[in-house]
Length: 452
Image (cartoon, rainbow, N blue to C red):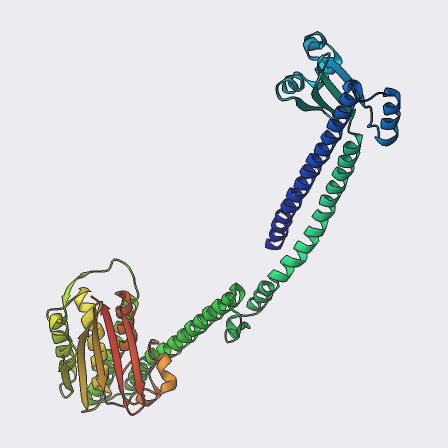
């Protein structure tokens, strides 16, 4: 069942329930009012009957009867019954007693008056104390007015409910169509977006309703997909280039050596070139393997890792690779209570992440100073690695974590574009965070946070 039909049916049922409830209330109160009015009229006739039959002040009974027939409208099937209270037991088997019910007689004897009803036949009885004894005067009549009125009212209310159902269903259909129109528009636009048009975005209104939130969520998802596809394209193009270059050099050098007879020194030179390019190929494939392994969220190793030991080992690795690099350790941001800090994770992976960032800073700083600062908050230990090197062009920072991506100003420097993506994967693997702030020719600052 479509959502539009569900909304229409739900709207119709809810509104129809209110209509039926109101109709029932109208019928009930109309019913009660009609009955109460008829009881009052019957009681009045019972009083008149008692006055006519027992009041000694009335001298001309015939004149009174004429007066009553002229000025008091007779009710449908109206009847009067005058019964001595001491003879009530004798009429138990009569139609009057069975129709009016024993409750009428007992209530009248107890309270002085009583009313009763059998379907649309109404009874009103009062006790009259005459000089000849105590009498129960009962007046009965058929309430045909209420019967006809309630029957007409019932037909009107039922007809109104049927018409209301059709009207409410039509209104609900229009209402649901109008409500779901923005969602249909979103679905139509999303259907037209493909791999080749991920740059397109849905139109987001200025409101703060759920439809606006849905469109904004779709746009965020499209942005992430576009970034992912761009990253994939960059990875494929850069990886193919990085892998193809040493392979081409190896094949070319081998072809050149085999083209004609050469002396031993030339063969040794060719082998040195092949060896060098093979080392590059090995470094690239090793980096790819580490990158793939760092993205695997399998069974993670969690152990207490000393921050002091981690810093010492990372500095040693960076200084071994770049012995001329001027690295300064800054612990001025570290609180005294933070001495002896530990983080939970894998020491080798943590060291790999920090040393990679440190080696990048050394590589692109020349002989300028590189600073490693250690800080701590209530929830994280923070490593800040800053340099005064060539920096990263602003437009290219968003791609800096793409595998094999290298900034345009470092093309002449040896590298493979694997270090930062590897560091990012390790940091994210252990629920950390890594940020890069850089400006071309003004240096770079990398902030790594690991939870305590």
